Amino acid sequence: MKTIEVSLWGETYKLNTIIDNYRSNGNIYIGLITQDGEPFADLTVNIKPLSANCGAVDTNNLPCAEALIEKYGLGERFTYVSSGFCNYPVYEFNIDNVREYEV
Image (spheres, rainbow, N blue to C red):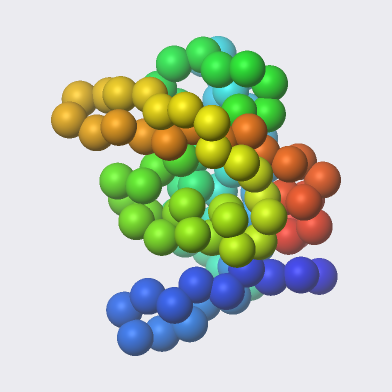
């Protein structure tokens, strides 16, 4: 199984993805979990309804999120959405590529 490597806080973490949908509007949810199955971070955040396979990326809580998406070919950015004081990039995710890292 492929893993996504993230270096933060002086350590390197090997992570996998989980894919689901937000119940309120069906937007794609992508989370990152450790190889032990522990939650690590939410890659997406639910702000407003978006097109299929599109998600707002939680750069507020995971500043390296865009770099991970680009490094591992998980999707392409095409716009931004605002919520509160934050502008979140919206990516169209390549679900086949995201599934390569899924548990």
